[in-house]
Image (cartoon, rainbow, N blue to C red; front, side, top):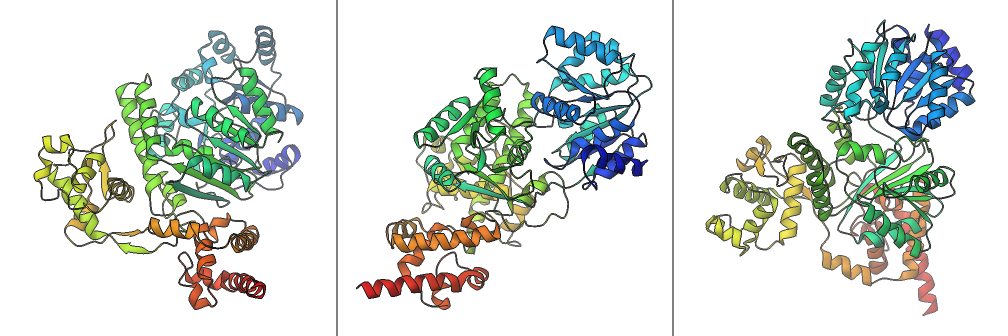
Length: 599
């Protein structure tokens, strides 16, 4: 049977071989076994059920919430000569009636249906009369309340399965799912001893970065001006932010589209089509955009605000580089974004249990923003992947700031949390450590604690940042609520007892950075940037992974003439010195020689 599947793969889809995980899933479904597949965006999930549907007798049902993807896939399959239809809210009454008659007549090999349509008694009656060998559930994480996109309509799928006799093979597909979500999928869809395939979450062609403490608009302008002609998506958390961001880009002369739920259906459709066909290179959108958009050449996905959870972020970021070519995923972090997400949670109509889950998911997202470890490893570990390794490409892996022992600071923070009975949040803890004269600090008597003011030389913002880092690295736990409460983990207790040390990368002193930003020669800086760009293009990495602008600025100030001198420039480690040192020294020497002749 699998040999016939390989022939069908070549015949209908034009591929000589299966991708990772595909053959195992196709073989399982053809053998009559249920299956659960977790495969990243762009891994070829749809072929895993389309190919068996083509080979099995009868009509396969595909449950999918993605109307745009539904249409794209149905159009593509019909273009290949595979009779396929869909039923969703876009059909007029006459179109729906005709489609239902044609389904009843057995015209189609596959029928895509939106989960909301499973409420239809007419459709359920029709289903009970059809030979249905396979039901495929796409975006299966939507069935789990622990998932990031729970949809009550997915609970009707079991009702659908009860209407079909004999019971069909059931397959569930998703790009992201924690172990808890996977168990929920198996339970709610009543999968029978499913074949489980997880092909891995890591995307080797993507570079992840978290950028903090910048003027977002200036960063956005510089970022896009360096990527003229590239296709990219900018995600913002609210309609207002989308409009503001897009207007700013238009004023800069950067043509950008917009997409959010406040626009008419026609405008959203027009924007989407222009983006798909490269008439628009940049799209500014809420998370409503991109679900099921099969656009392969998106080179960057930039999150202007913090998303609500890791699952959403990884799915949205994963829309970059679907063609396997390099893609950049940049998240601009600002603490106030967290407040926006908390406001959206509170304003939702969810019950308290769901809100608690949403707060826990948001906390995981904030941990990602503050982790000092590999960003991609952090994500794949979150999804339960064991033995993940550092990617070597993300902003953490390429961060060459000095690593210092911050155990003493960590002990002060942990001690303060314990003395505050582990009943307060980050801001209050930071105020006590800073020695704030805040009324609430005095009200609770925290100004009399031994830890009051022990970090008085630090700004409150710096202490808050450090607490967030310690939470992200597993030393602290925050409760899942609107106002999270800090508590210590076993890891922190070991630090307090003096059996474990805490290390962190330190940021270059701001005054020095401002000084180098003002000094140096602009012409030399441009030459060094061009050199950096050439290296970046050869390595297919962002230029800042070669050297940061601050490092190039310092070179223009200090004009190093030897490898020994260049090694003292901040951001020039041994590996980069060996790889790039001579080339940068040569440009600096040539510039210095020309300048001396002019003098």
